[in-house]
Length: 76
Image (tube, rainbow, N blue to C red; front, side, top):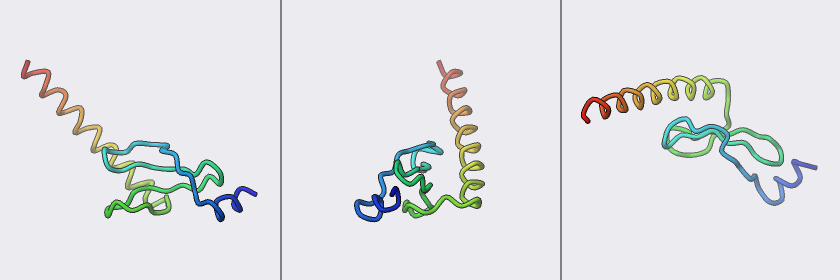
């Protein structure tokens, strides 16, 4: 029944993880299909390869944000 809804009306994606400002992971409310944003900004299925890429990307992004925060603290 869940797949029929998505077939007729399309998926309704909800953000499950914010990786960076431009990359997110999504999950359909009805059929639980998972998607992510690829390098071109398009939605693509969340495969194990993309999960690993997102994990590394998130780590790098968080490290960069922490470093930027530390720089702002020292300037004031």
